Amino acid sequence: MKKGILYQIGKRTVDFINGLQETCAFVGEICCRTFEVVFMPKRFRFGDMMLALERAGSNGVAINALVGFLLGVILAFQSATSLQMFGVEVYVADLMAIGLFRELGPIVTAILLAGRSGSAFAAEIGTMKVDEELDALETMDLPPVRFLVLPRIVAAMIAMPLLTIICELAGLIGGALVLKMMNIPLSVYWNHVADSSTVFMILLGLAKAVVFGLVIAIVGCGAGMRTRNTADGVGVAATKAVVGGILSVVILDGIIAVICYIFNV
Amino acid sequence: MEEIIKVEHVDAGYGKTVVLRDVNFCVKRGEVFVLLGGSGCGKSTMMKHIIGLNPVLAGSIKIADLEMNRKNKSAIRRKIGVMYQSGALFGSMTVLENVLLPLEEFSKMKKPERIDKAMYLLESVSMADAADKMPADLSGGMKKRAAIARAMALDPEILFLDEPSAGLDPITSYALDNLILKLRDEMKTTFVVVTHELPSIFTIADRCAMFDKSRKAMIALGSPKELRDESEDSFVREFFNRGKF
Ligand SMILES: Nc1ncnc2c1ncn2[C@@H]1O[C@H](COP(=O)(O)OP(=O)(O)O)[C@@H](O)[C@H]1O
Ligand SMILES: [Mg+2]
Image 1 (cartoon, chains in turn yellow, orange):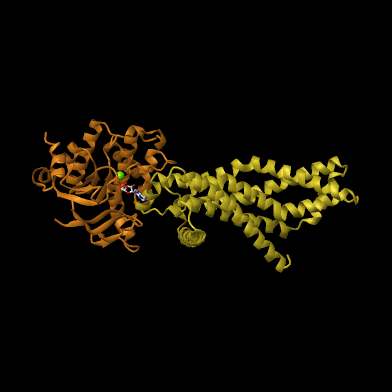
Image 2 (cartoon, chains in turn green, blue):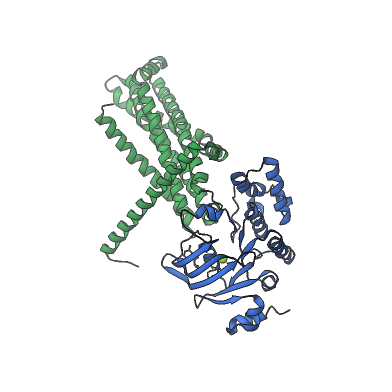
């Protein structure tokens, strides 16, 4: 049924506020359970974490390497054609290093993780919700957040930096290949890469990767926990996980960029 | 006898949708209490209110004199075991692991003891030979039986079973009825059972509550024989008379 525009605006606003409230409650619960697990490490579901890590991490190595490599090739090729006009195509190496370590490595890996694992988290937990498994955990006095969400969050936070490193290295190799074809010696390329990248920059990139992993896992699991018991419920949850995950990561990246700019790092 | 569950003036439902109005009954310690009624009349809804999954729309529910609230939640949940309508086994674990889970989390038993206990429970629902199967490879009835074993793991004071015999063959269903009676008599376990099967009701039920979808109300409360012979409601009398063997 089509309702007036005022109704639509009002409904969206109320939905948004409700969603915000639910998210806050969810994050709050995650914090509580994290405290619990920190003080009682035995309660952490280590096996489930390793399983999630395998799915989010090792199963994603190939795709991450491939995308990183292609990204490196494209980036190097596009910038080299411009820089060639000034005869300084060797500076492609600097651009590659800074671009990949600071921005592209973490963000591309995050987008891949949101697509592969954020959606999987939502679908897995969503199916459990529809099958009353979450209710079963609840009445067995086993908090679903400790059982299902924490292992996935930890797995995503471990997988992200590792996958990011793979993506970055593959990208650098792709760039090297392009410059090699433009007759720039590899040693010169790697020297430029080494000169322009700082430890701080690499660590900043990896730190961002960890935070992105946290956000993607929270959004994905949250979408799963809120799955509705309808025919398309699980599908909707998975879509929400991917869209929400990518959106949050991009916004967060923007915020981090502004903060870095303000503090001049 | 002590009243272990008290349901007082409860409106059952979800959010703004009322499914049942002004329900009153209590369950006594050590009895088998059956919830019955047509499909979609709110039996599962009522059960979920009692075990504290969904808040009631009005009225109050007490288990062992404890109101279901944030403070009492854990205490109440240690006293109860629940078998859901779909079984709700954890799909990523084998049947045995499902039954072991509550033991690992809450009992102080050592590992071999836990496995012994889990196998004993699976045997009692004749599921021991499927212990290493994944839930996805089980039939509906097998899932339910495994779920009953899991619900019994911590020797709960009250067992909630949502349609335990639906989809079971008559022989297994008969064995299940016997198991329920045995647990009631030996362990003094209280049962709240949702079921439609008249033979089963006459075998196990000490008392039952009957709900009606169109009237959105509880229409009968008492032992099956009382309801068959004395109910004022002709629909109830007729329903139970089909069970005159
Ligand atoms: N999560 C829910 N939200 C809203 N309505 C529900 C929900 N679950 C069940 N219902 C409705 O509540 C009524 C009672 O359902 P239920 O308690 O499952 O019936 P049954 O007696 O077969 O177990 C049904 O009309 C059903 O459509
Ligand atoms: Mg039901």
